[in-house]
Image (tube, rainbow, N blue to C red; front, top):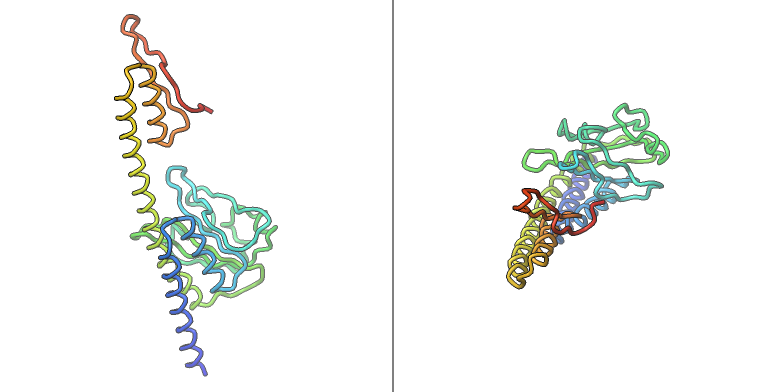
Length: 238
């Protein structure tokens, strides 16, 4: 009987990994990859909530990028290295919490209590040996996650990281292509006008697109006075 249960469980786990590979390989859009992963983990583990947290290095925080399961309010963002996601990423190993509301690592305790979350399993998302995020799944009832469930969640996270990497590479390639088109547009706009103000306005507009900047200003040197004056601006400084 135990052997049969073990074989059946192993077959189900392998089927889950195959399904994960199929679902995650079906898109190169990062938000969709993350949503599919969250839904899959929640379905396989029969938990109430799954959140996927990714490191946002420019902002210096860890942001919730996907969620499966309903909550009254969205989960908040965390400073990098803080909270349970930060602990998981720092240690780069799974974490199991039996009493989430009393865990000292919890940052948004009021939110956890309001949502009635009790038990949690979290695994790191490792890309080329570096922690880029964490996957957390939790229940509104006491639950002991088995070693097999921890291993399955970690395996799903590992398969997802490949899809996340591919999606990011695709996104970077698209952004690079868009910047090339912006440069080509600058060359075209500069060569189609002999009016200095119009040329500068076109350059400012193209620079805003190129750098995804909300506001760009171009300054011009006044040789007679030896000062810089703003010639044109594009966008909203606020």
